Image 1 (tube, rainbow, N blue to C red):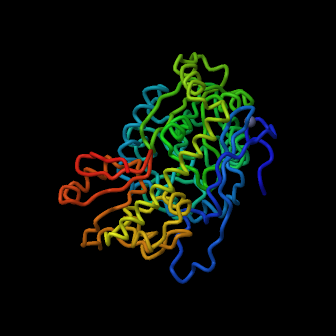
Image 2: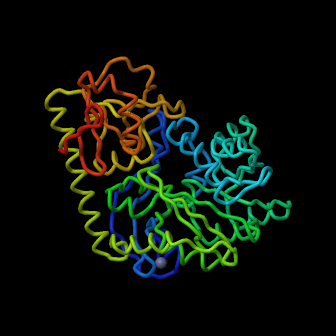
Image 3: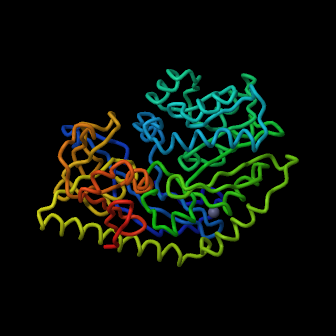
Length: 416
Ligand SMILES: [Zn+2]
């Protein structure tokens, strides 16, 4: 059912600014003989003209999205590195002491919690998905197999769980009900507890044309201004904000109770002013954004058609969920991209959602295509380094964010 009221403020002044067409869940990699069972959902994004929260028009059932989730944090080297830095930073900033309790919501395979545990913290994971949870347990992390919401927070409080820090990295924009999530926080947060939330920053997404953060798992994409309104309704406030380049531009918010003695830093007001300056509170910003995406995707398709006509081989490097949005939007199938190479065994041997390009094990590919379409453009620097030999030998990468580019050695690129 199409959303008729804003997730944060309840307003009915929702404006749909981009329609990415009907698409399957971008993480649902089927075997070739299962594709007739593929389930399609509409994928369109709206913005609230009162609080300016960007949100999905129709959010599929949560169980469809997260209970059989193939993403494994530990396979993602840049993210693992980022978490190793993040844990000590949070510990210093919040002033955690040895044996303080850290809960990670959406803990996946426990990568972040392992980094906290290595720094002397007690840790607990909360995650609804089966397979990553098993990996976390194998890593020695206790996992409560649940979605985070009011009910879960209440159950943990009844068990006497009082965390000093609750982290949620790349999680807080996957939830169907933000108020229910905050109510859960309120159950367990003490007077000095912090909710440390990392998420894709709407301002970066808009400025850098990163529309492929729009996929069914993302119920919304946050900016600070609307979040301030959300947290205020729960007696919470954003005490500080930091920015990170991870995932194409993210924020890390430090959220505490209103009455926490730590004053709100100037960085929070500065970030909100920067959002206004970027036009996040104006409709034309979103209309121009959608037009830019249409141009980029048309350009990408034309480039691939031209390469095919020239007899070039094109593979895709990696099959991240965001890539599914691009492939489906631009209608790129095996006729234009022969195969996708992947490191994640849960995707190998299957086909890409909706576009049905075969996914093969990266290690099994010995031949070198003329071009690799890099769908995980957010890790382009990492990949340019990793594939230096390939690029130096004349191979090229194609990316479509923030515009269609052909990338060569040392990351030098040409706009197409
Ligand atoms: Zn609103």
